[in-house]
Image 1 (cartoon, one colour):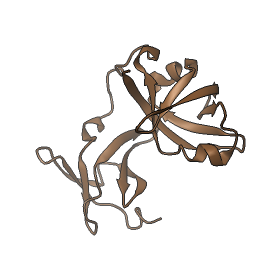
Image 2: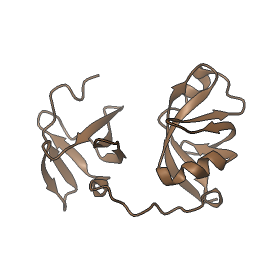
Image 3: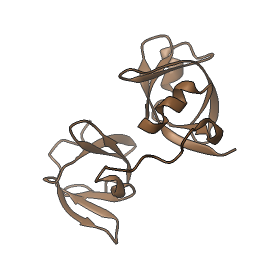
Image 4: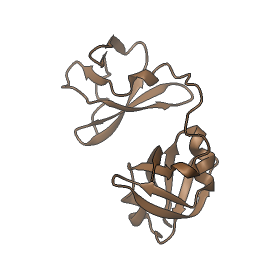
Length: 167
C-alpha cells in the first residue's frame, strides 16, 4: 500500500478528542473527504468520525474521546493512502526557501541545530522546522538572519536572536 505524507498532527483541541492537524494546502480537501488516515511511523490507521476546516483543520477519530488519548498522536506525521489523494504533486512552488529542507542550521553559540524538516509558510514570513535536543523549534527565515548558505555541504549559517532556542 502506497502512502503519501500530507502533514503533521498538531495539538489536542478541546476535551472531547479533537486534534489540530497541519497539512499541505493541496491535500486539505482530500483529508476532509477521507474516512481513514494513517499516523506515525510505522503508520497506524485511524478512522475519522469527523473533520472540519475553517481556520484550523480539526479531526475527530472513532474510539478516541478524550484529550489525553489524542495527545499521544501529537507531532506525528499523517498519511493518506495514495488512492485517496486526488493529486499527489504540489502546485508550483513559490516558496523561496523550499530548497533548504534537509539543510543543517549552524548558529553561533550552538552545536549543529540539526536538519530542517520542513518550511512553514505563514502569511508574514517563513519558518524552518527543526528538532533540537528532542524538541521542535521554529526558526524564522529572514535575510537579516541568514549569514551564509553552503550549497555543496547543505549548511545554512544563521545569526539567531538570543533566547530563541530556550524553552
